[in-house]
Length: 224
Image 1 (cartoon, rainbow, N blue to C red):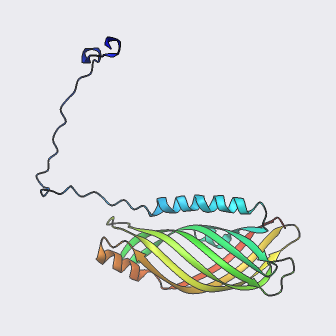
Image 2 (cartoon, rainbow, N blue to C red; image 1 turned 120 degrees about the vertical axis):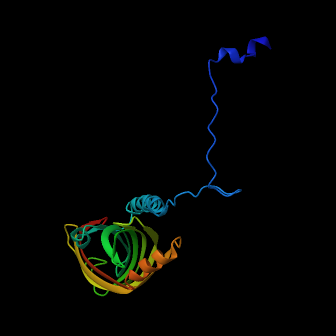
Image 3 (cartoon, rainbow, N blue to C red; image 1 turned 90 degrees about the vertical axis):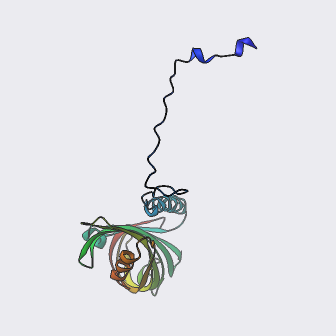
């Protein structure tokens, strides 16, 4: 037993007392308020990785049109779309995107950042190469957003959901090149963080209820 016994003399450590925190301004039984740290963007990043892995697994067998929306690039954002053929006349698409613009609320200017997930269903009326040509369909748009006041530093975060209808035309060439034009309209509403009711309500009211979309997309068809 003596072989495994150790004394504190063999450890040259010193222990200093920890200074007591000043809790004079804190009520008994409560803790100092901690700043709010929104987890919206972390959640979206995890969801984005999950979607990317799912898309990679599907591309191994299904016909897929991978597309980039040039219209989003013009406005400073990015939007990529994976369009999966269900059969010769229909497809399911999933788009993910990021946009960062300015929004004015009660004369205060906000940096309006949002990450979006956009599922779509399309029906093609007279396809020539499968899931191409004139189409009509329905879409949803789920956006996780944050608004930061440029001058006052006020932050607002939440979620916006929109549903709508769309139409367009997709050209799929024998080389695999894909070109698409589309447009759509729907209605959206915002909900979420209510920490500052006055600021949050004003910000939500400034968001447009009408959801408009316009796409000019280029891409490539895999597994054709």
